[in-house]
Image (tube, rainbow, N blue to C red; front, side, top):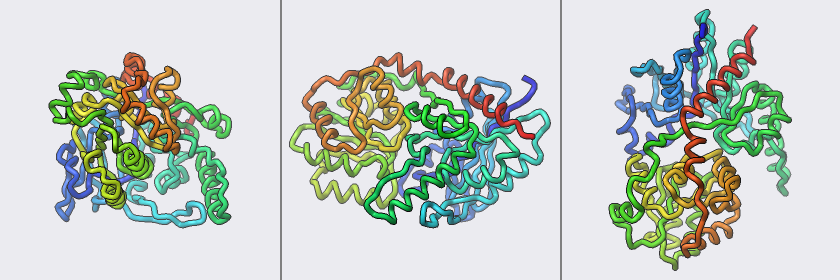
Length: 429
């Protein structure tokens, strides 16, 4: 190929949990800098932007790749190039206010990132096509980049959340102010979407509707998984023995960020209703301190100390052992387009309970597997958990179907097609 494709993959949020007190994920950062306050600024190869870039660089010779992200700890632009040529930059941020519905809302933004992007595009090599890749989210970065660069460089948007939100649908409310607020937010979302030319969705449910509503090229794709790692290596009984949980009854695993969108508070309420039965629930990862305090209050209120364990951030080896020991994996999200943690559970041979949002639910429905519950149907959650605790059979999916879907080679081939299409359909005059 005569031309190179240079991807600038922009993450539009600062590290969410790596900087939380007592989080140890910085210990495994692929690269760290230190700011003048002697605080670590981290880069994690586990982040999708890096996994994705590394796989593309491994497979193709015609790509170069950068990952840019705002970082609340950065006082200047920090840059590092890895051995394979992948370049990462972390940018300082400031808060700006943008209209969101009837309210002016705080968003983080980096003027330095826009300056760098402007300089890159003005000095683009003749034999290189640039492609900006960023989330399809109406935030300060998306709006500014769309406004300033849409007629100067190809831009591709990804959406890794539940894609119905992109349709900006009207929501009825008995509160007229709330109804007006939601209506304006929906119109703002639609206006943002109208300027998108290339869009990737990570699940399929709303693709026909989005194609019909917006004049953009829409594709389905996702990321891959390490199929050699995510497969059982010991039995469930062996894993339970190693974790010293043989006598805890039916083991449930909830693996997600601890944020309201994953409805962990509702899960605790359901667990409370079943606490007379023999089971134990493990929760991984972390979330905002305020939400963590709420969860701790609920655990004390419901007297669930002997029914739930919050493990915080754990590495992949410990997580794999936990999957091996798990009898039932439960995903409670209302926003996810996947999520990958549910597919890890499928690869590890777990039976699945999941809400009806996202690709995991779609795949399970197609194969008549799993126990799918409404996103906000908490009585059904209780029924599903009770069903599993009573050792009723929940059909497991054929692992080979999951492997085919998440084979990195398959996914990267599709990404190359998406990127090539985005560049070709947005030729800049």
